[in-house]
Image (cartoon, rainbow over all chains, first blue to last red; front, side, top):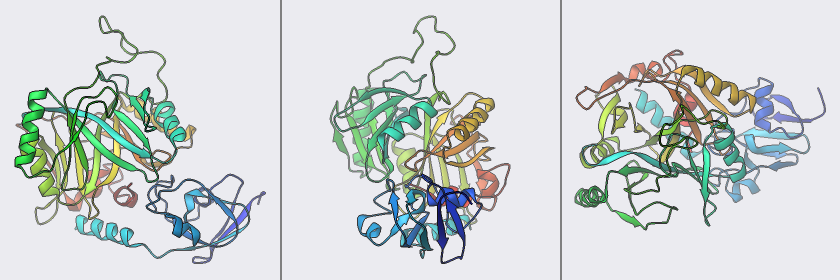
Length: 111
Length: 307
């Protein structure tokens, strides 16, 4: 354990350390933890959306389609663009309507 | 090319941070910046391309594709295509000359898949970058990163593939090179071409309209694809999958993301077609192998992560 912030996912019980300048998603991938879906890692696709329930953080640029200002207010942000300032507690979100649509589409397309 | 639509001309991609995006498309992909405009857009081209630009980056709050354009052989063909589009019931928008710098007038329309396309006949001819027109050397020195050869095609996700096929084949003169059919014979993927390339544009069925899967750039060799993979690691660029081979087209490929989450591909090789060839068909139950020939398993991200 080096210097860094502890990120705890209260939905899955996973916990990992995030070093300075590292995004939550990047740290998660580096530790081999799989508690948030990994998409584009660029704030564009919305796959890694989480809710931060406790702690302070900074955000990089995110697609307004997936992280509109009102969602950001509620701590609903993209893990690939979340940079912890203190220890964080996060939780997984129920898949949003567009995510569900695309899953169904894929399934239908594959059958 | 039977209706005069010749080849892919440009794609306008939305990016969240222009500085990061530009570094990605120039330093990593090896595109060359050719201009900028008052809208904050940056114009790029690959070195073998003869016109001034093929990729336009636009700063925006949501990534994705604004439009893809095809170059038409001449103004007479453009006028005929405009009429044909109108007769087909497609609403056509006129984009005046110069809206994109050094590009002639563009005819803009939406496909049933929810994507915006353009046709144009004129763009400033600047010649291949870094080599002379007469007695040209094999390649220019001073190229960066992956040294992308050309912008090759886009893969787009959206609904109404049959109506989109009708527009592209019967109005615009594309032909079907490759397809994926489900058990009922419904086409869930269509690779359409104007040339002997396996695709100049491709569509995969998806409920949500107008989604961008990737913009693809051509490399010469498998060694170049492996070198691209090395560069992706060296620059800690977000990777999707590869290096691997596709079943569809049999191209050798690697997928990665730009800093705004738009997917890019660089690839080499692939099958050729002529209009007399029967389309190559893959069955949906073999979709894993059709998309990733070596793994033979679908990567969920490839089907669902879009901008």
